[in-house]
Each structure stands twice: as C-alpha cells, then as structure tokens.
Image (cartoon, rainbow, N blue to C red; front, side):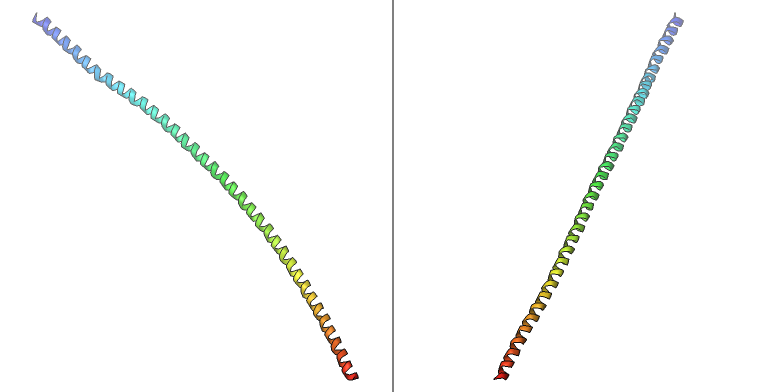
Length: 132
C-alpha cells in the first residue's frame, strides 16, 4: 500500500512539474511570437515611413525645381525689360542729341543773320555819316 501511494505521489508530482514546466514554455513561445509579430509590424511601419520620407523629398525637390524655373523666367523677363528700357533710353538720348545739334545750328544761323544785319546797319550808318 505504501508502494502504490508513493507511486501515485510520484506520478502526481511529475504531472504537476510537467504542467508547471510547460506553462513557462508556452509563455515563452507566445512572447517569442509576439516579439516576432511586433518586429514585423515595426519593419513594415519603418518601410512605410521611409517611403513617405522619400516621397516628401521628391515633392520638395519638384517644388524647388518649379520655383527655380519660375525665378529664372522672372529673371529673364526682367533682363528683357531692362534691355528694352536701355534701348529706348538710348534712342531718346540720340534724339535729344540730334535735337540739340539742330538747335545749336539754328542758333548759329540766327546769330550769323543777326550779326550780318547789324553789320549792314553799321555799314549803312557809316555810309550815311560819311556822306554828310
């Protein structure tokens, strides 16, 4: 009777230890599975974040390129307008020089006419005085 009691006690103890031993193993396996799952999720999230960053970089590069093109177009337009303004100013200056030259010629001509008229009057006055 003692032998069967002892055998039953050993059997119960072995089963209890086995049950206790398998419970931590189950928890360990579950934890490993959870870690694996979380690692996969983290990897996917990391890949997604990397893709989003690349997309943002591409967008910023595209926007920068568009702004550079717009700035170049504006600069080209400003240069064109300034060249037109320069040409117009040069034409106006040339016209003013020509007009000034004409005015000087007119003044010279008028002065010569006035001098000739005064000489003629002086000559007439001189002849009139000599005739008296």
